[in-house]
Length: 458
Ligand code: NAD
Image 1: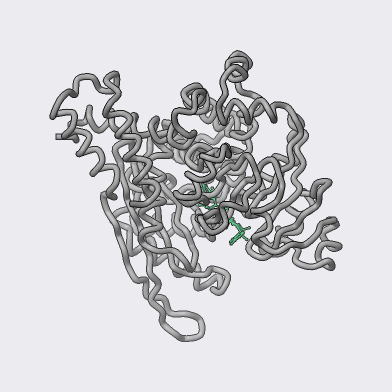
Image 2 (image 1 turned 180 degrees about the vertical axis):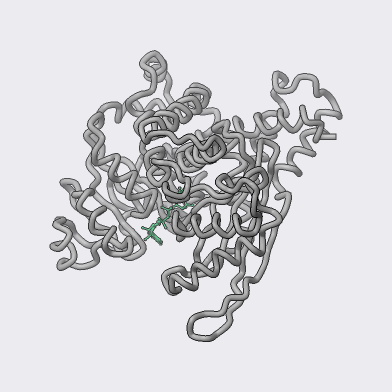
């Protein structure tokens, strides 16, 4: 059983014995309903798979495995990104789709969970080839997609250019029907939302900051009397400068690092950042704006040599790619890929606080080990929902053809995330469950109630 399924099952076990949860269900009817819930929440509704036939520019024809998984749509149309990466596989896409169902439920976003994937390394393909792949993806899965059915967005390796191409293809396949809400994460000129690109990274840092700065004072007083992982971490670091490291310097990581650098409340220092090639380290803090500027002109990659550091105007030691994980820092933000902390390296982790900007960057065993050790893990479904929340705003703006200012977008984003944090954090005081488990219980409660009221459990 994978990590998501395990935590969903634990949430159901906790809710089964909580008689205040759907009290109408009792005895064997309750048992049957919970068995139905376990089966519904652990299985995707649909797994679409195709092999796209793509003639490359060198004349060779290749078949590219492509997936669209629709996990659950009890709360609204399926929603989730399309990953462009050579390691994409069916189990990974299914797991990421189920995470989307839970994430949307947690943050009360009226979407279900979906995910897509293409087994390609986009760096090795020309723009023309990528354009054709995007068009074919839409053509192959057109019957399953649409603004009220399933709405893809970017993920690792894809961005607004790909979403623009895909929306355009959808529009030609379905002439005369609404198309703006068929894809989110588009460029602003094509109906994208201001602030979408920054939304996930901003939300990741906002969640972290909220815990250590903005959490209401009355509740903080309560925390200081509670001996728990959360209370201890908040008391130790509240309003104190922290040393942070950020793994991954793409869409999520670079924005989270910049937010931390610019955050006037906490005076944090970002002492390390990393990407697919290197870790950069400076005990006194890195010049993040200079690194952001450099990566923009360098296909997203950080400087890898002293010469490139000089060009970037950044002082740093160059360490190997994995070094970032083992640094003696206060907070480690994981914003690259999944399975970065596993049983083979979990004992080397020194950071007392870990924020999951990426999806599933810590394996199940490592998660248990670190939580038992007292590490505060701020989980993916809580911290990295900024993208899907602003995607929802983009979808709404597309329907209304009324567009919000960047200020309005961020204000709505932070309001939504604050609402979730305020409903989750009090339950976490006593540490009966980890923060991740608390989030899952909240999501599973919402999904279960909706499914029960829709008559789907018998
Ligand atoms: P991205 O492609 O923009 O950036 C990924 C970064 O990770 C790059 O800097 C890359 O060099 C680096 N990287 C790749 N392999 C690495 C490795 N082995 N070690 C260290 N760094 C490595 O992707 P992104 O959009 O920033 O997404 C990052 C993560 O966040 C993914 O797990 C994604 O699913 C998740 N996420 C993204 C969004 C979003 O809105 N973009 C929303 C929710 C979750």
